[in-house]
Image (tube, rainbow, N blue to C red; front, side):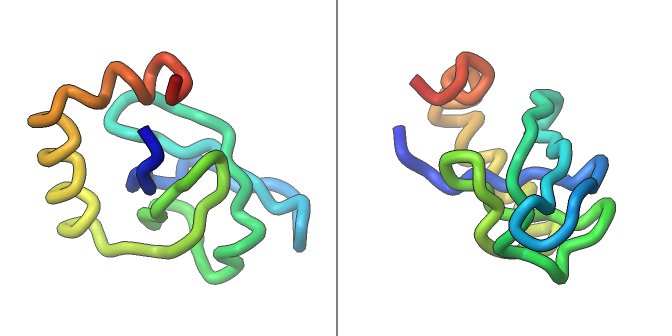
Length: 83
């Protein structure tokens, strides 16, 4: 499935085009490029699509999207790497 998934930033490293971080997707942690969201900081929620954070979202919106994804049973796909 090709979705933008919200996640919370746990760690940040690098600068500019190499800026990246560890992002928590409801207990599943992945490495993500943060180059497109230079305004995002630790603890912020971002929408991630194919390994790139593309926008910041507030926590309420992130929680709402996770409920929908969980209801659809798609969290397993995220854990398996999006195949």
